[in-house]
Amino acid sequence: MNEIIKRAKAPTPPFFKQLRNISLILAALGTTIATAPMALPIVVTKIAGYLALAGGVAGVVSQTAVEGE
Image (cartoon, rainbow, N blue to C red):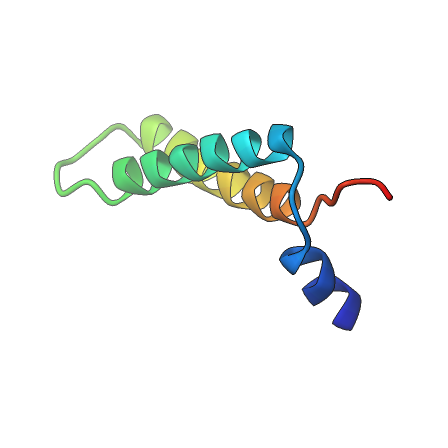
């Protein structure tokens, strides 16, 4: 567990910073669509849920990538 905290605090390579930012945008977009106050087709709602999940996972994985020593 201590290693995970160290990796999260370590410098992140530029590629993974960009990937993290894009994935957080996708997660926010998916969440916004999934919680829209209007009725949307079920397919759109399911895709939005998957988009939010994938964006969140990609964001976490990107944050834990560290530069090589």
